[in-house]
Every structure is written in C-alpha cells, then in structure tokens.
Length: 358
Image (cartoon, rainbow, N blue to C red; front, top):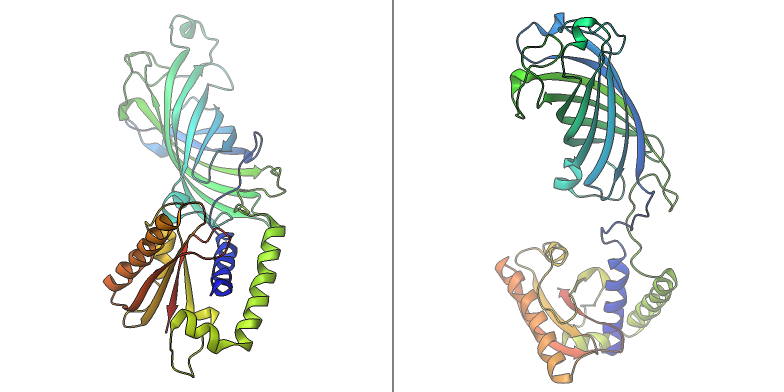
C-alpha cells in the first residue's frame, strides 16, 4: 500500500510541473521596442478623407505579466489638415504613458507562448506640444495640453521564437484641455472627454521583443520543481510500475479490495487530485482533472495527507479530501463505490486524493 501511494504521489508531483505558472521576471525581462505610423484626422466637423494627417512614432514598453504592461509612446504629426498651418514641418507631438492589457491572455489564459493572433487594449494619458513659428501662432497660449489615448491593438506574433509582432491599431486621442477658439488645436477650454475635441487614428506598427534572462523572448511556464527531484521521481515511478506489473493481485487487493481477477490497476485508470497544505477544497485544476471521469463510471477514492500534523488531524483531513472528491463526482453522475481516508502514507508530502476509475 505504501509503495502504491508513493507511486501516486510521485506521478502527481511530476504532473504539477506542467502547471501554468509563468517564471519570475527580472528587471529588464519582457521589454520591447517598436515603431509605428499611419494617419489621423479630426473626429467631427469635416470629411475624414479630406483631412488626413500622417504621423510616425516609437513605443518602448514592458509586460509585467502575460496580461498587464506599461509603455511610453511618442508620435509626431506632419500635416496641418484640417487645422490652420503652424508654419512647421512637424505640427504636433503627442507623448503618452499607456497601460496595456492583453485581452487574449486575460480571458483565454497563457499557454507558455504568445498566440499567433492577440487583442491588446491600450489606454493612458499624455502630453501634447504644438509647434509653430508664425506671428499669429505666437499670440496664443496653447502650446501644451493634456491628452488621452484609447485604442486596440490587433497583433500578429511571428518568427521562430515569437520575438516579432506586427499590429494594426485603431485609436482615438482626446485633447482634454485645449483652448477654445484658436485655429490650431482641438478647441477645448476645460479638462473633459468630448468626441468633438478629439481625433481618430489608424496606425500599423512593428515590435521587437528583446531576449529575456532565461533565453526566451516571452514569458515561459515555471519549472516548479528541481530537475534532479523530477528525475528521481521518474525513476521511482518506473520501478514501482514494474513491481506493479509483476505482482498485480497483491496491490489490487490492498487498494481496491477483492476486485475481480481479470481487473488490473493501470496508471491510465488513475486520476490524481492535489490539495493545498491543510486544506480539503478542490482547486480549479482539480475540478478540471475530475471532469475527465465520465458519468456512470464506478470509482474508488483514497485520500491521503502529508506528515506534518498529528495522526488524528491527518486521518480526518484525508477523509475530508476523499469526501470532497466523492461529492464532486457524484454531482456529475459518477458512481462512487468507496471513499476512504488513509491518513499519512509514506514520508513524502502526499496531499492528494487518488481516484481509481473502473
């Protein structure tokens, strides 16, 4: 019995390596740089195609998680349309601090590398500066103003290591406190979001994601256990599997009791459910594993505990874990023949329940 439970524990610990937790980022990991360009035009009050303003910009950013990040972006606008001329080649510069939210990873989870196609929301505040050298321009006091950008990046990741990204970004930029009545800006005399004091923009960009300290260009799934420990556990699994093949009846009698002679315990018929220390609550990952047991199947459940607590506490905890698994499966229509708590089994951290599917 002790050897079989050790097999279960070793398999469960090996399985936990694939848990989708990303590696910790160092200070300069997950940094990217990009260039972008496109056209912009005033949102209201004129025909869009008659007042296109070309622009070019750069973006430097960092993702702190696969979902959240920050970026600094600065764009220069070269045409005066549809506003009055300022007499300069570069009419306006807008520099923004943007928060980025990867909606694809937020709602779909991160699988270890970026998807080929992702949607990223960008939003933030900025500083706009209006250039000019005409005498009429010098009479106004509206060279600097507060801006705000809202946009969506439709991004395509490519390359062998997904180090490159191409995106298309529709956005709207608000002039939050422009001065009303001047022929040079958006015409807003107080801080507010007003579509009549904004311009829309369609840009395309190319991004390069710098190599991280772990050698990749993106977040990676964490290696939760030491590789030497995993190798040792794999050796134990193989050894116990061979022993199980040689003496199936003895092991089956102990864990499954008097099962019919032709029936054998196979690793593929076992479902491992792990628990937090001292807890008997099913995690989201545990429920996902149990969802693979089809309704109508007969199962036997063994709950175990780690050796930290007293025998009384561990016996009660292991039974609670077996009961929690049994209730979840019964609610799904699975037939639970037996759910038993075995307390501490062996000297390893066996905080798990083992489901034998007949």
